[in-house]
Length: 248
Image 1 (tube, rainbow, N blue to C red):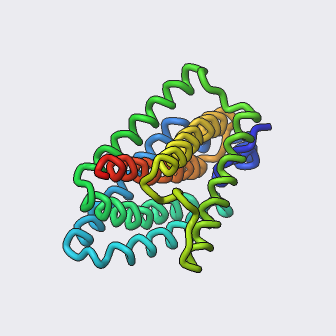
Image 2: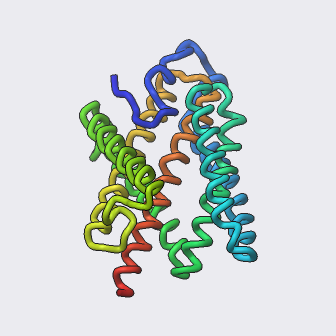
């Protein structure tokens, strides 16, 4: 069976309680509605955070770190306690709003207009890949999933290595630099992040087909939000690199 690289979505998640019927079952539309709800929660806290950072730029770092750490904690809780998702997923979205709002305000202060571009590209990619998935042009096969998981592991190790080096005042060359190589790395990471949407779509669809319990709609929505936030941040970084290179 195919196993999702998204920790919130896996086969064990969707093979439980297959005897459920009617309103107790997960549906695709229910997951869509809950994804919209999570997105609205994140946008509200992101907007508030944006205003706070615009008034006091010194808050940006604190809000980014607080939102990232808090979001990670509730991400882990949601992954291990799926039944808590109706509560933990909205909290995760609110906390990620702190992170997204702070980093967006900071980046937009450097390059005005970069945030709407990144948000538009993120939504455009999501709908484009949804169309590709529905048309059957890309299938979430085991081989496809394994390849993405391998890429994800490499990216995570790259970021962890860069973080460890940063503790000693060093960094991995080009990873966060506005260079042609840095641009190439960013493009690859954006592609990997985008393709994870295919796995998310597949697992949500299969969850509905296999009769997953109703609370799994929140888990499916949470999984999509994790991927979309990652994709947005990577696109934001890619646009920053492109503009930085153009200014040189």
